[in-house]
Amino acid sequence: MNTYLFFRNCLTNLIKQIIIDNGIKDVEIYTDGRKLLTILGFYRPTKNWDLLVIRKRQLLAAIELKSQVGPSFGNNFNNRVEEALGNATDLNTAFREGAFGESSKPFLGYFFVLEECSKSMMPVRITSPHFPTFPEFDDTSYAMRYEILCRKLVQEQLYDAAALILTSKESENSGKCRPLSDLTSAKRFVINLAGRMSSFALD
Image 1 (cartoon, rainbow, N blue to C red):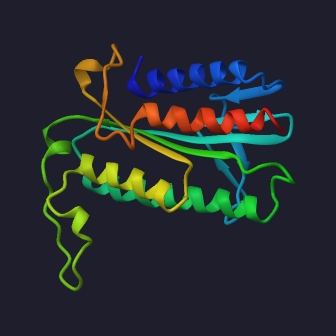
Image 2: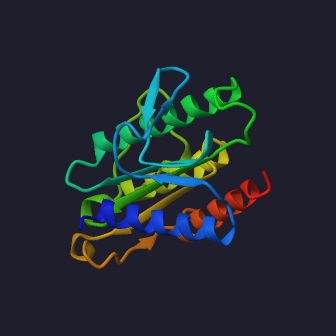
Image 3: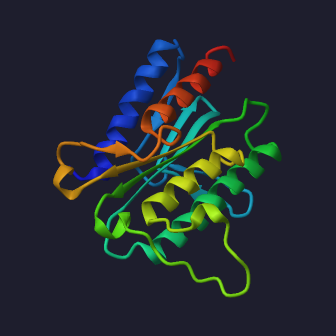
């Protein structure tokens, strides 16, 4: 089993348990099938998510689950940032415009699994000849930049929770991993998810 599938299955099982614990009925969790993972967008007709939680015609949660291994971290990092920002803006705007009816705002999550290796952990030089970059990016590795991304995604209220998990190729089958910070840990992600799911039990 690859790392992506391992964490997707873990998340799915956790969500199932959270739903059971909160007594939420008539819920479907979708992780497979392109058609079943498709919901509408605002800036585009549709968008395929990695995990959807739907109760009848109410969207409870949409989660992006992404992974990246080396050696090319640079270009992939920029692509992932643009993708994360665009997907959140698209769904949040669609909700604001009433695309999901009168239901409560769905939980929006971003869960990222990154290979822990020398290239992802070493500081990377920044080139910005015209304007200085924000100081938090000074002497940062790609792993640290992903952690900053996850913090800012939640800080700016684009996502309800965002997690960064580091794992090595040697741990691919065991699932052994670690967070880079408590704020962007899997534990914090699940706590936030559980809180939102419990609120849906009252709807």
